[in-house]
Image (cartoon, rainbow, N blue to C red; front, top):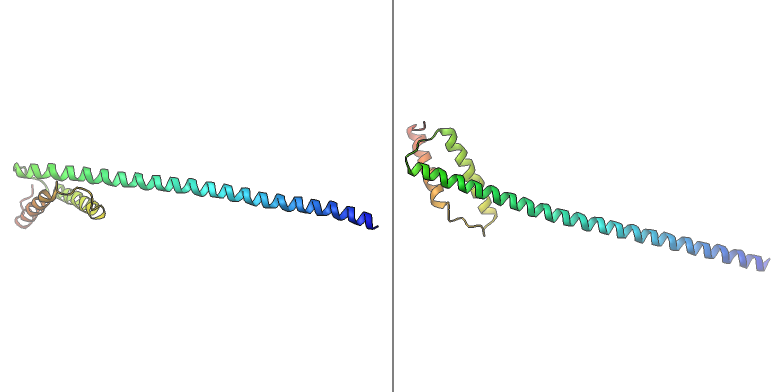
Length: 131
């Protein structure tokens, strides 16, 4: 019986060790897959952040274009409705918010135009001069 016990113990021991090694490898493979998924998610997240930053910058540049065009119209004596002024004030808010969040963004283009638009808006509001 001793020989049989040794043989059975050897077989079972070897099988157990093989099974244990299988479980360890399976765990390692799952961890590798999890790591790969997490890495891919991180890459996607970074890309989304870059895209959002680009879209925010595009919106700010577009708002600045509207601001400068509107200021040119005011300088040329073009009259505007209160609603149109309010749309320009929203563009100013968008632009100024972006500039506060991105101090390296060149802001000097529109500073005087914004000041002028707000000044003309106050005059039109106070004297009811909107068209």
